[in-house]
Image 1 (cartoon, rainbow over the protein chains, first blue to last red):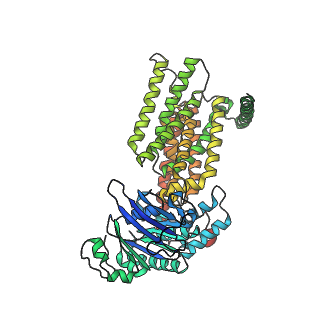
Image 2: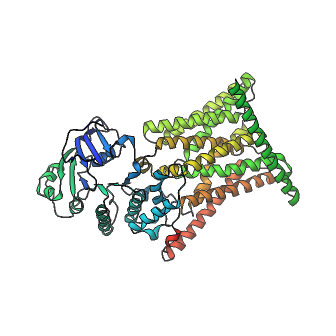
Image 3: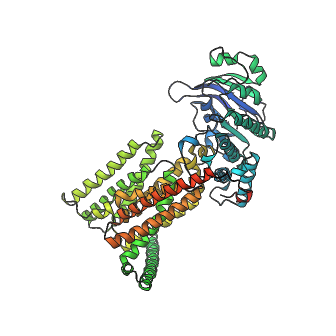
Length: 260
Length: 328
């Protein structure tokens, strides 16, 4: 590894996410362009941007699901496409289970999947089950362990996916619009859970359409619309004109406003 | 030279061992038949039929559970039809070169190649689409039909057993081939159960977790090819996919966990096969069709049970589960 030139916010310590001059497009026109950012351990980062701004695509690039056209992405110090040490990455997507399939599988079975990368081709041990049970307790749904995952509400299901990440001893939690389809009351509780996890040292990278929620809960805001418009703390973001520039209009910025 | 000799010896010993095992199975069923006065167990071909049938009823729902819950039920049908092309290749080679290869062996080879082709097409086009699956299906069947007609000068003889399956033609060689397929399929699934489950449940999350998803998809497709060819002997090309789908759909009606769904689908398939074979012997009906009809009847029963069960659950208070029960 050759030492890289410093870029914004890099403190020199090994960052958990390192995105460097990355551009990517599904077709000829780029969806994300020339983006550089790093995420340090313990940060709680919220990524916002209008629809089609490339925020989910950037997340997929960070996770190694796409190969960047230009630039490079490192995750946990490895190239993202190498998929190394992936047991340390927990991933929670939009709640898609609900409408796509009615597969018979219990909450406990789903959470236990977090242990699969650790077990490899070996057997699941009682230690693995203990960790899964503990994770369910942490997110507060251990009483639902034997329910079918499809019987849970959207909020409970997202908690189950977080439990899966915890069971896998994830150090980085990546969430892609996790509150879509979750009722308002559960959303608040969900963000409280994320704050608690962050307080316990979990690094969190969150893509969210609800700007108000990001400003309220995260410690750092990244605003993008193909290019990076803002990267800094929420208070500075609220005072800047980055939102107007990124979204292209004068949007109302009352607390809790939802742009989608 | 010595390598080839060694392989021949090992295969010979393996064949002998399996042959001996099937003999013991035959003895056991024969004894049961005599003791309880079950007439159909007087025949060795029925012993083979029950052996092959119950092995199929384990591995077909085993693979089918993973396929159905990924909405890939059609892949079994497509591979069965390409396996028919494999049968035709076997018959063609035998007729042309005077060899005695079992057409089921060539069917396994061709179906596995086709399964990889389907997988690669879906990886390139980034989706399993029913159009490409339908194209593979018809290409396989057309190729088989043409090869067989070339072979017999336009007269397609002796292919009914491959199209519809036949209890009476389950030879010793074919029973041994099936045992080998069974061992391979169950071993691979038990070794990769966790990975296959993860990929089945959420492919993207599995990729993020570092699983080599395309690799497991290829394994799954090849296992499907093996199961399809194995089941073809009794079920026939046209009905073989039913064994992959119908018991699984039945089990999904009432099973809560994935493991439960797997076990239940195997149990339902066993019932369908045993009842189906017995009925087909009794009434001299085709075994494949009878088995499928029994399986569908079981499926309908399972739907009703599932309805009653879900009504009960909604009527009851949601029960809380003690921590000790938190197992797989």
